[in-house]
Image (cartoon, rainbow, N blue to C red; front, top):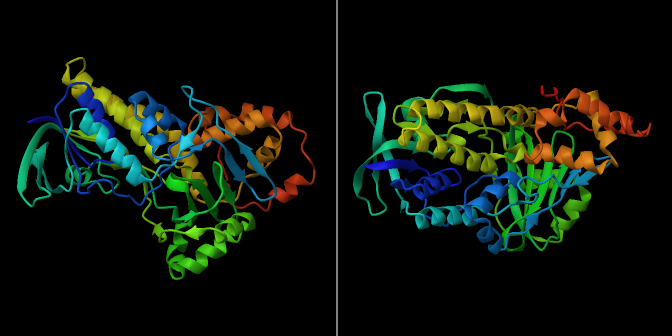
Length: 422
């Protein structure tokens, strides 16, 4: 019997396995994929996630993978752009955007090097129950053999459609339907520094550098437009890029290296992440729209917190159920402001007058621009920055140009934000 059996070996499962093994536990990690392999998901890691990679001793491997740092963010509203860098956390201010086939392999290898038993190409056929308690899994190995494995706890790190969550019928709450959808691809031969985000109508157009000199280009738009967009992906993608002529020209001068990848399956939910013999981590327990690119960073944080809860329960420092309840509470307390913020942005509602005034006031105020960008990367608390007294202070200190606000009323892609409570 293993101490922990983890289903899913990507950004949530491998760190969970690695950290448990480093504490001396016997861990089995399984995944139906073999590595290296790509995954059709956002692959930006914000500064808080990078700080954890550094703490785990893995940041140097990401840097060595020929992945450039993301030190600058351009947030282009049309009439003008806010450009800056998010404040540092634990001495880290930059993000990175490694390809998943690079990052996930680094994480799997780190788990294996820490003593985790890793089985790639392993297909889980059944989550085993004894009454209402999960006791293990039955699955098919890469060689085709059916095996049964048991553990003190089975952890679902297998994404938003988690088989573990489905088997135990993990309760969902604070759910919202899919709000946006996206298509992306990769180009070579295109100069870029940092992250570029362009708000154009009900569109988010973005670009950032990744491994091997490639640029990831993406277009995000309301979910209900997915089928119409898919009817002519190439034409519609180019039409959206043409809303940003400077970026479109750079991409035309480069070379598209891979096919378009799109998804409309982007639900927003919380799940209860624990029960008798089971736990959930990463997208299996909490998923939101990729508009703010928080998924990997969230997975790293949740892996750490779940491991601390399991260690407290396994060693008897706390009742395991109490420790796991605290894990859920910590997760929810941390992510609720970002969850609301992301869902509001992903709704593509027109901006409230207060938001227009804020953006105008930020122009020329580098310190506060950086802090606003930090709310997107997760280095500045959203309730702190968007507290009404803080916004009044920023606006009062600005020398607003009279013609600017009428221009900003044409911006339609920033959320009609209800300011989070402090």
